[in-house]
Length: 200
Picture 1 (cartoon, helix red, strand yellow):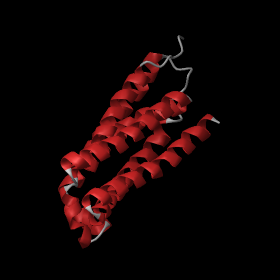
Picture 2 (spheres, rainbow, N blue to C red; picture 1 turned 90 degrees about the vertical axis):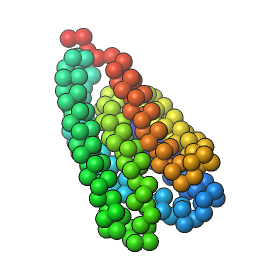
Picture 3 (cartoon, rainbow, N blue to C red; picture 1 turned 60 degrees about the vertical axis):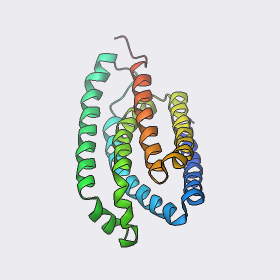
Picture 4 (cartoon, helix red, strand yellow; picture 1 turned 90 degrees about the horizontal axis):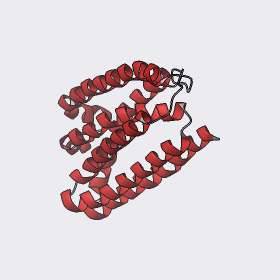
């Protein structure tokens, strides 16, 4: 039941939030802008899905309530640092190759997306770390903690998108995404650091 809720609630919320974001961008900036944003989001999803699949295989089997706190951090800290290091390398590579990336994954009609990808990539970098920490909560079956973070992060993304589109126009959605994932990373790190582990 815990794993079902962890899967179902984000699965239901995410399309609603993304639809709200697209509607906000389309209404405020035009539907061409909404299409370009959606292209940027698809590129972002591709990178994050790659890291999520790898981290799931590495982290989920290794986390157990029977571990002591020191055993957990001895195992997890190197994984977190290495995954964020690899994410940084990927982000830098995609940053310098962003024009080619847009041409290959989208089309020349989306060439303007290359100018806005850097902020989205910053969000992707934070998202990798946040997801690694989220997997710890999933492995520990900390359903309430995981879902609280997930729901709040989606609400922050929606609210920040609305506000930032008003303030920063087309940069707004990417800035909202970066902010949401940075906050998720920080909050998840605090929550995981306060988990209770075995004493022996």
